Amino acid sequence: MTRSVRRTRRMLKVTGAGAAALLALSACSSSDSDSAKTSDSSASASASDKLSGEVTVFAAASLKESFTALGKEFEKEHPGTKVTFSFGGSDALAASITGGAPADVFASASPKTMKIVTDAGDAAGTPATFVRNQLEIATLPGNPDKIASLKDLTKSDLKVVLCDKTVPCGAAAEKAIEAGKLKLTPVSYEEDVKSALNKVVLKEADAAVVYKTDVKAAGDKVEGVEFPESADAINDYPITVLKESQNSDAAKAFIALVQSADGQKVLSEAGFLQP
Image 1: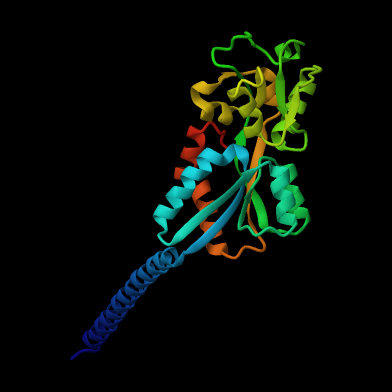
Image 2: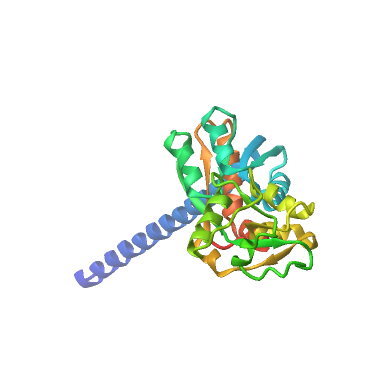
């Protein structure tokens, strides 16, 4: 046999062995990859299955309808969990949190009230803005006083209600009134936006400056009037897991639902603006 033929056979053997090795390595890699995917999927499912217990959410009053719906959805997705809400003025909720009230999640109607919690070191991580909200005038059904602008609320014969200036809806209303260079004297300042709206629903006031979401939630119990100055007072809503959370995994999962496409759809349908 000639040297040339022997060399050619040796090369073929080496090439064949290399190809076999590559095939084996590829198969092994593919198997490892599939295994990793299966493992990741199992871990994800396992993590989801492990969620249980109570999640306590402190949230701005204006979030009541949409968060209640999301709470039910969360419990449905994670059997064994229970979401408990405390709705109210963001300033009062922030004070409760810094005062030691047990909670897992805080959703505020403004960065200013969230800052009370972060400055006290009670937030775990950086709060994220998940929606925005804009003001609207709520009038009696049919708008019998023919209110068409923010300036109309300055009429002396009208009983107008505002949120207290310490809560986000009140601070936003004050900002809008200043933007319109108006002087408005309300008959009362309410502790949160739902209380302000309720004055109109009960016909104890002719109008209230509240959020669009609250007007929408009230249905035919009130009528909404938009005003251009509201564009100067749009509130960002931040949300965070709290440092002393006793169920941080479930708290993070609830926030993930709020920020998800499904969560954002519920909030958008309630009248909230995208962040």
